Length: 441
Image (tube, rainbow, N blue to C red; front, side, top):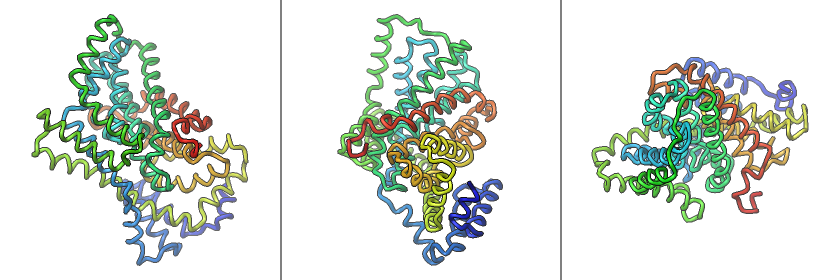
């Protein structure tokens, strides 16, 4: 396949040189944005795809998009949510909802990950916030610490899978698809991933008997649930605004993010859990996260442009379809590529670089473009709990001191069940298109 690919595209050192440079820089632990930026600039200059005088302009043009304004807003919303204590209200309600079940607090942990994801759109933020609230309690409930860490890391994967998701904003920008449309399409797949993590935890808990419980009576269950809702119902105003605004078409993702920030701040002031003195720290924290994402996008988009000019996407399609024209096999190949890429590189550069390369292949086999986007983000999401670069593994390891490899080993069952959902999304278009108008099906 590689020989066919090289012959089709006529690749030279203007391609291989930057690729080797990128691999070397990543191996030397150079920040990913700097590695991508160096490779992109070298490729643009050597290939002549873009005059050197226009490289700077191209970098800024890549991030000069209104849709990207939503990214810092959702990140800031998640930060405010934690600082105001509203995230603990989610945990209280989730715990009340699952108190009837054996392994209830483990299930509550997964649910609160999903609730947090429905606001922040960031998996790392969810892993850190939920991990600090739940890991010690999970251990007290009977779970081994490595498994408790793996449970939180897996649950936080929903950060890029349940809308509003930063990943869908980025892939929508790259492929020219409305982020609101992708949010609607991602709702059922995101819920399926959340359900798969819940089922995995229930099965593992049944096998090993980590956590007891489930002896709450019918009347006591509803009393406890009523108390939790009465003391924390206002926390659900924020996700309610986001979901209603986006899915009703009344708000764009950017407007929904801005509204969510304002409402969360107002709630913090009303509750007395937020002060003006907290704002500098919140803004700095959110800026740091945003400062990691935007440079990657800025450098990745010109790199993707250079690859397109060199004919790499078209050459890839020709080479792959030369091996087989079976759509099922080609879909499986795309999934393997995405999972492998997700294991060694962050989601943002994977989206910006791989989406323009794989999209023509998906078009060639007749895959719906919305389905392709959902499949891609979900497959990349598995990479958050797979070594060597599983970001969520590093986050929970950092807040607990637990070994990354021990956490990764305990995450294997979650990876298995998540992969089943990826395959369902890839081969059953209705999962991604059921929520969409007929024009997108």
